[in-house]
Length: 376
Image (tube, rainbow, N blue to C red; front, top):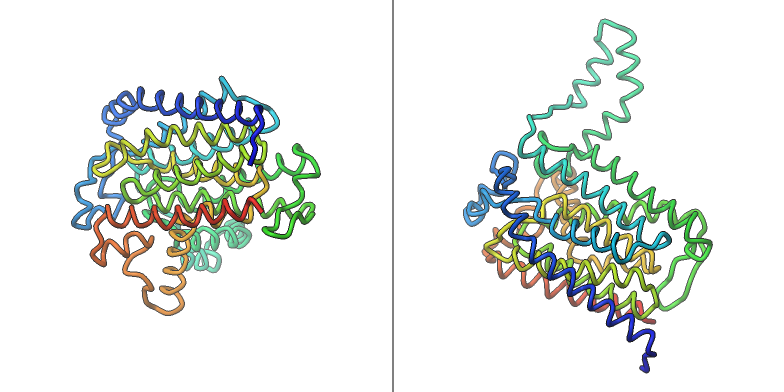
């Protein structure tokens, strides 16, 4: 393939910005670590049951919210060097919104008090026996919301403190809706079509909106679920964003290519400090923010249907949780020893390092397959 000078200039620029993001992230990582220790933003067993597992006890006291290293670095550099109204302001905005939600959850899990919500049986009882008819009417009208709250709690890793799952899903829906509005109304009619691998583009009009909302929500939560072992989320995200940078470059999305390269550079620094034993861990602030950004950057270059490959290991992790829930409530037994699936292999005797590296390899293979398909 012959690459013209313009493409080579863009590639040089991308690599330069990636190196800049990497250097800046490395430089301020010690400051971030100091801040996290100063305010005692660390993992604690009272809200994370997995810390009771033998090999994981060493993670008690390790700072969380290390994902700020990537979020802040990428946001600042994008605003200074790559701020383009059509392509980058909404991805960065949604990333920051999702990261804010995750950051609030991280802080509340550490400093918050136990938050209780009524069980569904209690709500049904209040509908029947409450002495005031206005309250009985209120509980009846809000019954669908109560059902949503209770069923969504099944997905929670540590319910009770922090932001509850139904609150997360509502705010993530808003983030997905912002992305869908941007793509449908601001990017033009071209983006109302989806690319079908090996077939071409199919115009689906307004149906693009629910698809975008679903993928933004699903991917953000998938990355969040996978953030459970040192190096797993960071290394996998690095593989994905590096490949998205290549794909964006090849298809001429200059601003998105630079953004993906900046994320890759910052992730190099983050993963360096996150390799076992981790200096800090990503936390919800990083996993929700970068998960949303992963979905948006794939959608905007019109490869939405390849997200299951570009986010392969993350999707596997979240699906393992869903399968576990279905098994527990329909079959009355667990399908895996523990979910997400990385804990299943850990309980089966795999070391953390072995699990993470094998997951990296499987993820890299799936991402390369996605890149190959995208080029047809």
